[in-house]
Image (cartoon, rainbow, N blue to C red; front, side, top):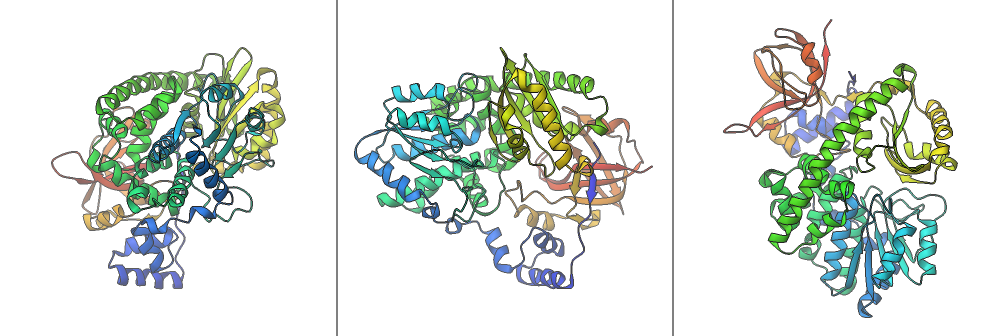
Length: 572
């Protein structure tokens, strides 16, 4: 789907003065100074902090309202040799958070175990069906990670069973909080904690920092030890890579390169990644899908076992098992995607008047519908809910687009749902089949009332209009300092008007477009992932407009500059 390019706003006189100041202070190219300002850095101090991610930039974990209470209870459990059970979620954020607390508390002598719910049996988060298993482990204290803030009935049941629970979570809380011993969540109303965008593993890390500090073992070495896990969970959960998350990602990626965790090392090797040049893309497209595959295709406990493994042979065996799960997951992804597209094409004849899509089947594997929903949003650019039914009861996943709040939409229609959770752009739900039609009708009305149909054409913000002769390794080296890239700190997108295609475009891999363009005598190699449909529309000597990012290609004997296409505008 062709995107609507949003040109950058003109700088004011005051902003132009700041650009000149950046150029003078940092001796950077004008392009870099402008990009820094467009990214929201409006002082030299902010720029210095941006380029130098340090542990000193992390906030005091005691700013969480219940942190003191939580730490006191955990230290009491350590002293009394109580059994602690870490209760995680089955995605990357949940499994890395579980591994983090398991390893971190094991170091201080905790009697500890973990429980990850089974996607098919227990469903998302804390579930009543799992509590007996946790009780059988002998736990008197549960610490939830990446879940629990909305588990009202489940936590009442935990209390009734004579156990206590400390909730660590980052999801949006509903109006009524559960009666947990303590709740640590940066999104709680009235919180003093200054950064709301932590992933679940980030919240768990904050708890571990506070425990270590209370025990008097806080040091930079201890703080750094598990940042590879924090980086993987944070990057995989697609939270904004700003503030503390940027610190986690920057330092944690370096720890991945330094091979601190045996399980992650084995996963990197089996993924075929270059450990010396790991970046956020490698996490999102290489490591994260494999960790997720364990929970989607079988049990996510396998992923936790990998992440806490202490023997190289065991790590390699577990990584191979996860790789087999991932291969099966990829096959199911493609089959389910094609089936979903067929349903959509039959059900929604006029896409121009379609505001959202709710589709269901008795044949879909619940473990892949979240991935496929994201693929459908990419294809149709509409909010999508996919539901897998079994014996009249459905588990669903939803994905949003633009600025539409899908969590708020589900909250509006929650009387039709058995349960739901998530956040603005990604939700999970359960529903009885008899409510599906009413749910879809009410959801559709809500979307029509709250979604600006003008947003239906995907916007593509352009950071800078660039000429090819402005592209050089000096600028690109500066651009690489903006890494790690991710939400709220994406690679800058450039546009260039009127480039000429100088070769015969061709497709590589799975629908990826390759071509070379020229303007003013300067050539640029381009690759467009999932843009292979343009092959029939572009030919040699055509003049086109391109939107792209820039990076080094590692193919060949030495790195070369390559453009990664985001969109193409054909000239009529």
